[in-house]
Image 1 (tube, rainbow, N blue to C red):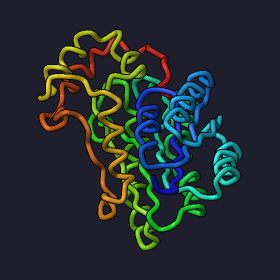
Image 2: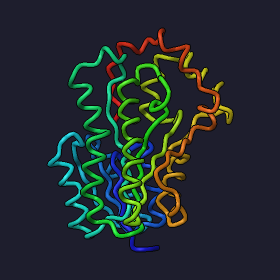
Image 3: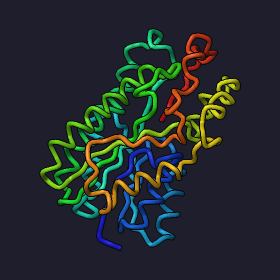
Length: 268
């Protein structure tokens, strides 16, 4: 195992948890970040320690600049370096675009977009050549997914930033890429689909591989992009959706009839 350090935001559960556990294969240290669920983060940390990985658990509101700085400082204090940054955490309200209030929009863009720029800027100060930055995007960045409009806009901005940062950081030997998961079996997806049983079946029918993805399906791709084998992949978005987007998906037919128009759940 090489002497490599990773920070994964939103790694107490779901896709973030799977990424943190997968990165343990070739990272000596991992910073597990969470916002609310400390017990879940500690459980992930324990699993990592059982694999021989050095771990710190860091809490932080990604909307807050000082807390973003504190996350990076905690990594610096423990290891003095950072080789891999995976920006996985997201937040947003499942609402039609025009039902969003200012605080919904600010929270979504601050958590997804501004935090990515700030964390990346601080992370690269600790990154040697060979550093890796991976942002977790989504199909809503390029398709109109019902009640995902503002989240999708933030994810589209995230992908644009990935392309720009790839040009800026490539000469320093640091690659920047994104991964766009499709329908993945997570708590957030369950919240989204619980009032849309018809959409759930329509999604399954539209996925050529015939199943929802698992967090490990995404984590495997992220781990590859963070590896030395992916040194010549830079500035792109890898879609992990079982072929869902190849056929366009079932989104359009549900856009105007979605009963989640009044669902005020958060994606975190």
